[in-house]
Image 1 (cartoon, rainbow, N blue to C red):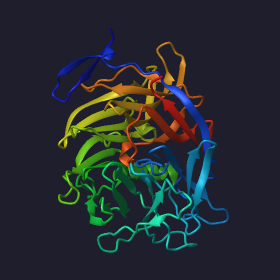
Image 2: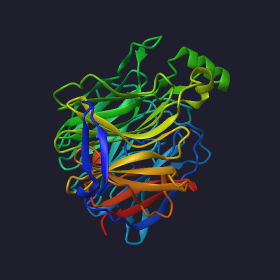
Image 3: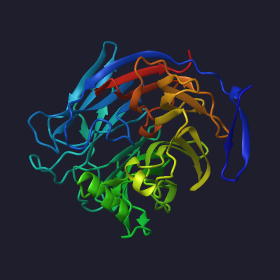
Image 4: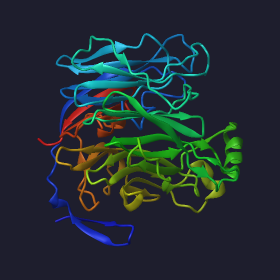
Length: 461
């Protein structure tokens, strides 16, 4: 019998058995290309909205939103969205935006009743390098894809100064038929608007960023690439700091190294929530992890809201920025990890590493983690595994591992894909897709970094 130990925040160790979970038998049913992307040279790309998703399922239909670069149009707003669906004869393009230009990809959401939603952010200044933009949400009917989409025209608090740099987040409660959309305003806050089941944009507000009082020059800590979940009007928000380098010594060193007067900090993870976005303000920010002291890097992976209200978080962590190491941290040890935590009522109840590699030791790095839930409320983590196993054999594959009830992890199972995804979206519940024994992925392969590919994996044979 195999065992795993995890350490809870209380310092207790919990013993759990891997054999308590039914074994998986993943079978790849489909593995195919959807579209090819041409680099737009505007700082974004098809995976830019990594905290949201560009693939959803509604009933028997699966949809993908794509990003097309428009030839002979200068950045930044030199792209337009596409919408695809898959039928018996493979993938087909349902619609191509012919009304506007944008910079970033357009995330999707879906309801159980067949409605599919696409978040857009068209520029109001075509031909200009940058400028104002007007976010919208388009509604499609999966039962009649020939019909033009219906613009839902979100209502905001006042008249926010939206631009092409939206950093927006789009989430859905698929069973209750409700939506929430966040969109950043500069470095101070995000505007949000909520659409209820009656079809009204009935609540709006601002999410103020955490305050960086400890910086040499105190300032708001802009949060980007968040994972957002909406259920029963409770909203949970988990993202990473994205501010110009706040450490003056680091900033000067990077200027000398790169010649650029800016460099961004992705070193702190923050979480906040509200039990009812229409009635209660967001709670005080909780800092989940930090690599501020060693200049490392953190990347939010996913958020899953359990039936009992627990919030499960997933992120990747690198201890040290190698550029800073020789000058600032010559004796520090590098490490890379795929980490997991559970939040209950705003408090971190436990945290552990699914995979961790320390410098000088062979090991496997876990990255690009996503949660996948099944209809019986089991929770899995899907991720990229790369590195060397204990026998020195090279590993580069996607894996799935179960999160057991005590917070430990079952044995990893390889997904038998011909090409592993280096980064990917899934049909997440955060966008309204239902729990399923079928894992659906959209993403990029190392061998074909400009082609967006799809995989469908049956998790039990």
